[in-house]
Image (tube, rainbow, N blue to C red; front, top):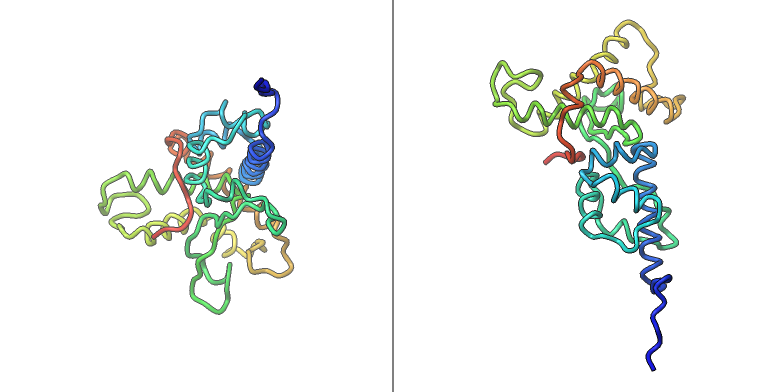
Length: 223
């Protein structure tokens, strides 16, 4: 006589898999969006209800389609959602918004250096992603704001980044002691906090241009 399958408990291997996935999705949303599921849903294009199910551990099994969408939106390797080795601490392997920054902010020995704005500074990341895409959607011409006739993705990103950081440049020219990234006496939290405030400023200044952008724009390194 066949044993009746116990529906209340999935096989151990499957249950372990979705527990890891839940932990990873939770870490992602908490690290980038301070636990704001709605914000994460809008950015990634994953339906809010589906994302909330995974975040709260209510999903019965990993959905590859959802995980692929999250991986694409945040520049993550797909396998990261399933890793659970002892050597892996679960840290979200995100590079951030990569662009060229003035040397005094990152490296005094070079004219400019690629640097990532950390994802914890999400309001600023959101502005940069959506502003760049909005400008790319317009035909290249001298009258196009900020990026003009530029077509090289790296040059477009450099100009967008330079524009967004102008308030800090102006403050520095007036002698403001700003917590730039290369200052050894400055804690990482101060740098991130300044970037968060800068992002919130631009969210208001560029409203509704930024807030009306479609969901699912990815960010990370440019070709």
